[in-house]
Amino acid sequence: RAQPIAYYQNTDLDNTPFMEITEIAEAEATEDFHDPFDLPHVPFNFDRLSHSESMKRSLDFYKLVNGRRSLRMFSEDPVPIEVIRNCCMAAATAPSGAHTEPWTFAIIHTREMKAEIRQIIEHEERINYESRMSQQWVSDLAKLRTNWEKEYLETAPYLIVVFKQAYGIDENGKRVNHYYYEQSNSIACGILITALHNAGLVTLTSTPMNAGPAIRALLDRPVNEKVQLLLPVGYPASNATVPDLKRKPASKVLFEY
Ligand code: IYR
Image (cartoon, rainbow, N blue to C red; front, side, top):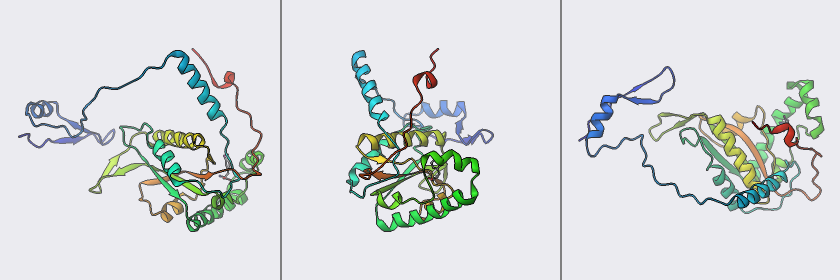
């Protein structure tokens, strides 16, 4: 039988467990040894596309995502919740540091909950717009014609709140390290926004300033979770408008070496 393995903690850097080399060797020598941190590695099945197929797909995808716009005027028309679930599960396929999957998606669809979230956000945004933020901030945003009122938080059939987990909590209540959770979560959010657009829906990438803790409390999420984004999702209002923004040309964003 394998003896219990002593791990020690390298507290200077992080909490990654290390095994003494001699312990690994001894433990691996026993037949029923299974390193709890190891995973079987399996063959990767991959179908290679022709260059012309890759060319076509890359251009089609570019055209698809180039059509995405952030919307602030929503219709009340319903959307099947399965579509929203699928988009969230697509987002949850994002790569993450040490495969820790540091995200939680909360789908809000009841009138009552949407109204409560609107109240929380408008209360904070009113302060942001009226006193908390600088004149520079207010004038930089002016072209978007936003203000503290957020009617879309109630008209959109869904609000998706994405939480980032700074660390995990295992079944025994023990803290688990999450690596690169900011980057991991941002990637997941990018996939979510793209998945919603691909499903024929519109959304707004909103970051409810100063309202995160109250939203977390309302949704009864644990303390390791922080609001990353709040996405109203649905169809655009029939009279919806968007600012006539232009994207930077390739010459400004792309450099080849
Ligand atoms: N969060 C505020 C303000 C706002 C800030 C930026 I930077 C934007 O690109 C858009 C809005 C709001 O939602 O009104």
